Amino acid sequence: MAIHRIGAQRLLREPFVLVTPPGMKGDDPLALLRAAPFIRYDRTSFGGRMVSQFLCRERLTPKIALEIDEIDAIVRMVEHNLGVALVPLAGQWRERAERVRVVPLGESLTFYRKLIVVMRYSWRQSPLHQLITDFLRAAATEAQTG
Image (cartoon, rainbow, N blue to C red; front, side, top):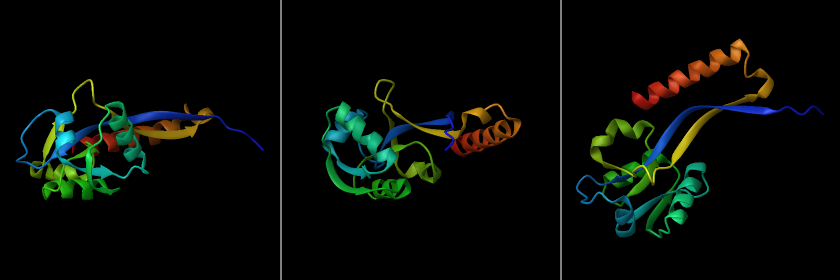
């Protein structure tokens, strides 16, 4: 059985942010997480595990209102004043971002979801791989900024 080394290239870094209902006062994300009901990104998902690590690192035990694994649904719950949530600043919910308040975590607290492309290490310099990676990077950047 042949063993192949794997290589990875980062396409994009998506920062996690705190989203709150638009009328919620306060700019300290840790204080808001302590005080408000928390709509939890499912802890069994990749992003949810990142949220768990953040909460553990910051010694936070928020009051969990509900736990779901769909980012758009989480943001919709915030829109309807059911609580606050930690989600990556990415995806379709950004088109409706005026319906929630986005509170950056700040330089010392921000953590990131990374979008990567994985390939055989020996293929990393091939023209086809470079073409596909460049296309994926452009599409990911467009989705993030668009």
